[in-house]
Length: 87
Image (cartoon, rainbow, N blue to C red; front, top):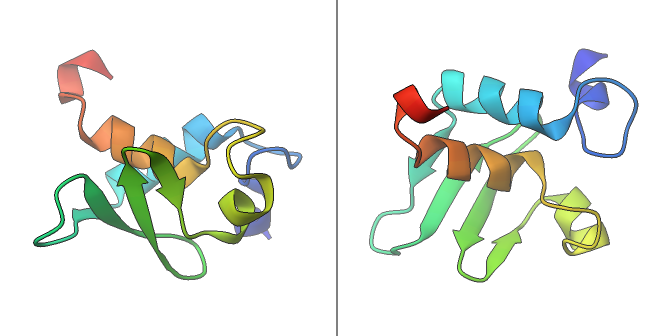
């Protein structure tokens, strides 16, 4: 399915496109009481994303630990923090 193709490293759309879709779907929410931490509703689950140091609880991040770039959830958090006119 389409949801399977949007992970970084997989065939199909790049993580940046998947991240834009997450932001458009309002899937990125601040984690109350934890500055720099966000909850991101992904295709299959909700993940916890931290910006400093960058990390995500998704399986892709756990498997690659940033060695292949950031996951779409971390990209979505970065996008959500950028004013729309700069995206």
